[in-house]
Length: 427
Image (cartoon, rainbow, N blue to C red; front, top):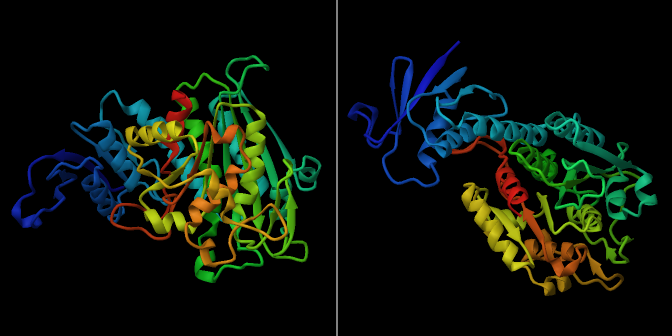
């Protein structure tokens, strides 16, 4: 078994390692050379990716490491094939890092799972199992499957998922550490759980469909965030809603030109079956609002427009509640999870007009046209109460990497779980 001890140094590497080398080696140890001010710890992340390429079985972090330096290394060293291969530095931070790491691995593994293995029902059940393992006496759950969604008037989720032989699921998880069944709900989380997105009749090209197992990344993210908050001592009641479905083509699939009438009376014309995430989130947001929670956070791999705007390094935040937006950006900054605000105003609700319904689910243009991420957020704002006060929408532009780069492994990132946990603990 190949093992390596890793230490940090502020001194440059010897000349024979190359100019400005970030790594040097000595027998069974390696040194990461921190050459300049690096608040995002990109030097450590780059070194971790190089070390991952050496096919090491185990690494030990030796000497003095700050907690965020250790996390940066683990974040970039851990891949879908290599997990739990790190021994933390011998300091007071190991418990906090272990909690974070458990949530990170859960979130990444859920998102990286093959669509054959992770059906909508399996996504729901595995999420409940993990959360229950963290707090067995405080977690309860219920779900509505297939035709039961129609009875509950969750028509968006039902229509998106009805084309698959594996039925759609609305999952509600209730974390209630108070022991009081009448305790108020302090926060509600909503996650997009499209376990595979073909695009429906607005079918994606093969290259665009290849990685669509990640389209349930929002569901994994809010579950991972809640789990991390539980491990960090969350003592308030929180409800979690996962909107789980496969968006497939069949004789029973929803079609272009269909009109869906939602529980709140809003009618929606389908002009793009590949704009399905907002259709299922609408149901989840209405369910979340029924709890009267003062904080509602939804997360979704919702639009390519967010990735076009921010790349794969930032998540996009949207809020009509500008005070909440500033607090959320503060949480993201404190947790070293890059996020950036994109525009959202009430008038974004009018950006997807329809001749036949209150709104369309997109614009009949490639990618939803200009401002697509804001238009999608505007659509969602139709389904939250109190003029959007207390509601944060996260478009997960940084949730998944199609291929590895110099700083990040291929697959799910898990970027966002710490911010969500921080919000649950702080609000």
